[in-house]
Length: 249
Image 1 (cartoon, rainbow, N blue to C red):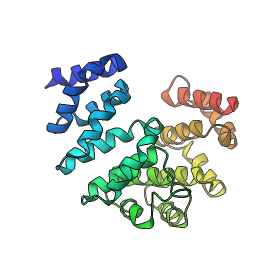
Image 2: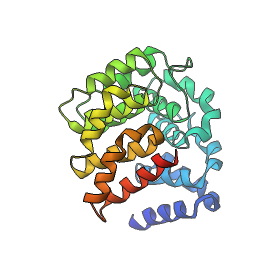
Image 3: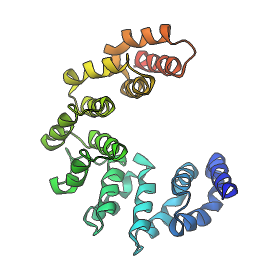
């Protein structure tokens, strides 16, 4: 078992040159419940030559097989934007699990609620419900996905509700999503506060600020404090990288 996992990870390190291994990787992804995440990450690293195999999996009668194919296709992000019309029908799949991962995959590919007809209110209803899920990992994923979907009253209302969550991590992730959607005044204080909390929350905030580039200039002063007070730590290096990104833009 350990050997197979190591082989999968090694193929990922090889990257596109490992494309001849795709048929075997797809076979394992389709027929085994083991190493799913590792295989998906490796397929992503190998590249778009995996698409024909994954598209064939979409026709499989088993829910989990369709689900795995959609998740993997979505991992390629904008590179697979041309597949949006092919994945859109799966928003109406009989399986709620397939519908959920389809929304996430389409968002990763660049589909937006605000400027397309891909996402009607009923299409995102499952995601909206998941923002109130008791499983914090599911909740975080749903909130992050909503932040990429484009601005709508429905999405803003759901995210704003999560700003009142008992978990600061959830409040912070909701703030990040709202910031992406243009709600900057409401969310800057939460982002700045997170920079002074524990390391996990600091990293979430710093990595988001780096991603937003010049829009994060308001946090430069606090990021500089981190580079002075947390020498040689992970937070220190992450803050340094964020400052460079913000200044570049």
